[in-house]
Length: 129
Image 1 (cartoon, rainbow, N blue to C red):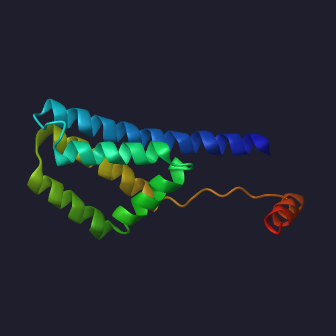
Image 2: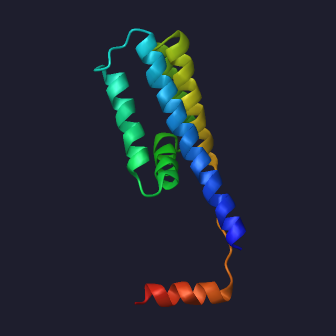
């Protein structure tokens, strides 16, 4: 069973890495397109990267953020509409990629690993201490 747990952890890290990479790509594109390093767009997204990287469980934080940003399709479409009105070209494309990634994550259910009765007893005993 430990093998399955390792696979889940690797998958989770990949989701966190994808979001961080999308955020970094957005910041880099913004800088290349004339946004200053002190602009709200750049500083705000740098904060997001740091928050994700500092969490004990980045995957859970990303999934929470995704569900908060995009609880449903109309919320996603509204955010897309707003970025289309505000940004253009490469910055718009990077925002679309980031929001699409978050929206896909918001629709995914967390993966749960079934455990044996013995493992459940061990966990229960540990929690009752």
